[in-house]
Image 1 (cartoon, rainbow, N blue to C red):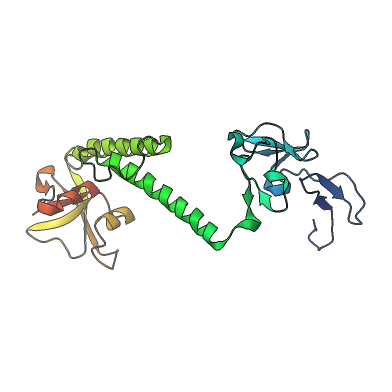
Image 2 (tube, rainbow, N blue to C red; image 1 turned 180 degrees about the vertical axis):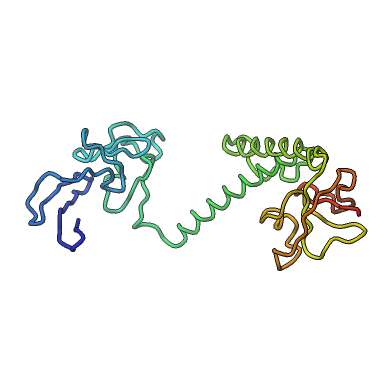
Length: 247
């Protein structure tokens, strides 16, 4: 650790399993003058007990062992207290559930990890969309419905669907006079595409980027009877706040 002038204020080092030693600038072992919260392995350090808090377990640096058994059972071996398979120079355990052997990873291993992440992300997205569209099951069979996390994603989709369904009737017919924004050319007699609400970035995006100049718009108020829900294949645009204004 150096000061603002670059002079060494304190030195520290570790043994293989994280036992820390603090030293003066001249390498004489001493106690630290700083209140360190994070040390070896970026683990949370408890100065009172001398243990590292690693999410699911605590690491005893002097013993080089976890203080409790592996919550994952024997998935990492029969020694339920071993830290990174007794090879801390080649591995790390960020959660206390299993070590990652950095030195043994090849390019194919990283591709497999990335593929697994994308697959899980895709499953979560499909489960959420499946809940968002309760009257149709286009994603049925594309994810595991028994997985607890995916069940949560599906439930969140159902909640979003219910909120959307309850919000639709409230726009814009509950207000005596509804604020609307028309992007692009000025309003003219006939049918005009408008957005409910004021001129803001959300309305501009939901309107489908009608012009490259976002500052060209007209705001006004409309009676509920003059606004209509989009018809035909464009009916879904009403969910985003788009309406047809008849002058």
